[in-house]
Length: 377
Image 1 (tube, rainbow, N blue to C red):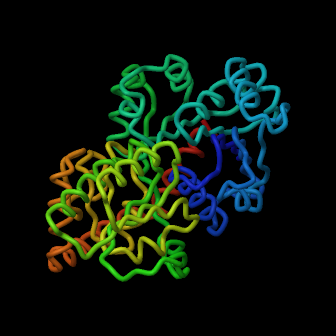
Image 2: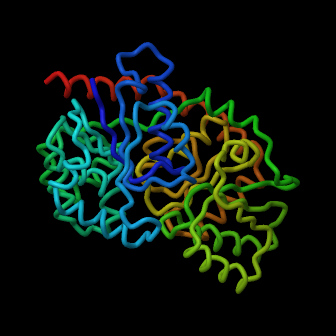
Image 3: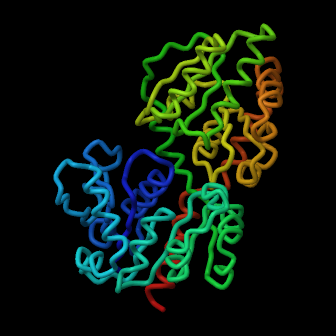
């Protein structure tokens, strides 16, 4: 069975982490999928600095991309790729090999590309709450692409519900839910790496892109509330990058005289930081199936999360929830965790137990079943 996977890039995001976990599983287990002979990866954006590029080049049969006909002039190359997006004949010119199954591993552009390929059964992977991220605005080209799919995979039941809110006509399509896999062995191995930042206080940690969606403004406002009340003895670590939105946050920090905040930027291996923290915070306004929550739970961390449906779906009662975008409510949760060691210990043990249901083998086999079902049909 020959498989083509199309993705926007292969940087350090959650969707890419899921893909790497599947590849590692198939590479080490006795299955009928051999990544080095069966799987090609087409990257719409291929960058030398992408975190997982060396891995996929080593473990997959082939890694393909568009020719950069405009050299290093990025905006012209982007225009060129959009031109291909609007001309199915061109994408079939670049991808001529016949595949049994083709997967758009990310919602949007990668799924639109593969919907136009002539060969193969088609799968689209939805990793986010699409209605929220699109602000309820339909994209008819995207809707047409999803209608061309033989199967759509969503990473949570809420992600599926969100998809159908935006495109109710997809109710007739085959839509499966496969939770993001948790590779505990890899996770534990990577926590052994030493971190350079000293830890001498209680640490609240947030991991993710520095964007509006991640609710960092709510987090910083909650910190200001505690600081104004004289609550101390802790610091905040923020892992992730996003220059444009970080400038707004820097201004807020400076204007309000906030202290004990450390922006650590993009970290290729965030797991030692998760292991070192005392409480993991997810302040996102919406998510599809936040990998960082699963990973934090597997490392036995106390977790505070916004009360978005996906967090409650995957964590159940093993986390402390605050009202989405409510800084005062978040500050109260932070103070509880900071001051109540018994509550913290209970949440840690509950999170560890909850993480057991997100097994890599279970998710990989569910995906294999879909792949074989489509390839053989």
